[in-house]
Length: 81
Image (tube, rainbow, N blue to C red):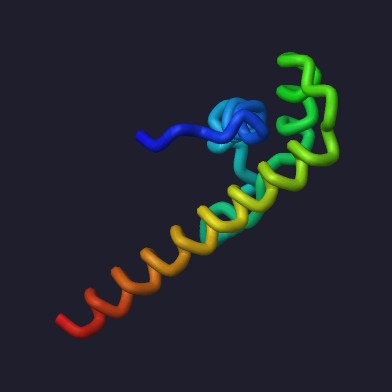
């Protein structure tokens, strides 16, 4: 695993603790439960909450986009069988 920049250590710690805290819609996850993000930041003592919050949201949105792309790829592959 590549070295993690020290500025992102808290971000990754928060993200890994909340990455399964989805708000679900009929088609699957639609958002991250931001109350969980805030709770974890309080729990681990994050001082720059705005920076960490925005970076966690960025990572989650990126991962959600990739998940949706993969699901669409699999749906199209199944359709073309």
